[in-house]
Length: 160
Image 1 (cartoon, rainbow, N blue to C red):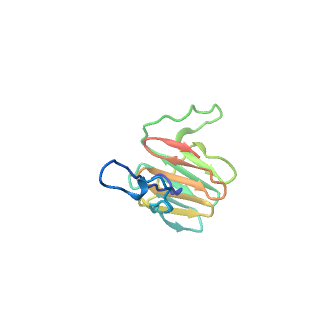
Image 2 (image 1 turned 135 degrees about the vertical axis):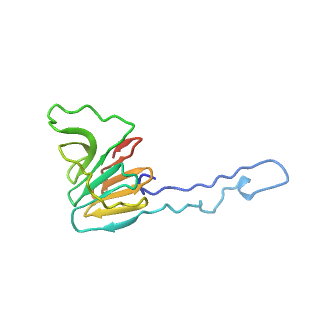
Image 3 (image 1 turned 120 degrees about the vertical axis):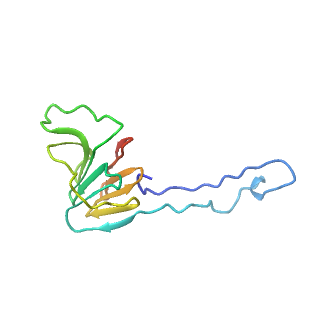
């Protein structure tokens, strides 16, 4: 799962003709509430200051504080948008989310790599409104105040 956004469960009832009669196959609507499956929630750790982590795969590294979240990726199967003319540094290797704006590709001469703390799959770290979650499918970072964010993985990226 890329993010813990919640979800809905559904019950599927297959009705067949024959000796077996199921109450749900009758013409009366069922009054039972639909069953729901619990949505796994990441274990979250909150910190007061700047922090960083690397995904267990070693392919994604992130840094965040209360004003931004940035993740860089080493190997990817997708292409970034064209480099803007005003970008004098590297472009397309990472995504950046700041408190006052949408997520975007970063133009930077440095890297988020170099951190040693591994954030295990199924765990999240939060600094102020910025929250990043590590999952086998990739890393999701969001600003809890605005709902904006991004998902980054080897297979794809998404600006939220």
